[in-house]
Length: 149
Image (cartoon, rainbow, N blue to C red):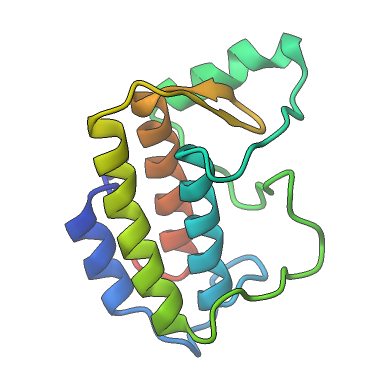
């Protein structure tokens, strides 16, 4: 798996993303994808609290997935998403990308000085390293959605 979760890799990928680009799979528009990645970064630094949706007996296998080389499968769906596209938060793709870049930098700054753990709705309570593993898989998945990696 590509270690995509660093500021330079993310910025390089986002710099070529176009607002009218068609997804290879899934329903997201480029801006929906960027805002979705932004939202999950904000979850990982505690901005939005999440309730667990996975069952206790599944959690060990789910968490083992984080430590594996396996990628998120096409068609995987976040538990907080519905079949409808969520409303966009930002006025355009460029604004959403700028906020994503800022939040990614904030993520690394935050965990440089914090040992906090925050709940992922499927994987449970994650520490810095586990959030990095998740975001690496998640960013890779969505960057593949738009042919960015």
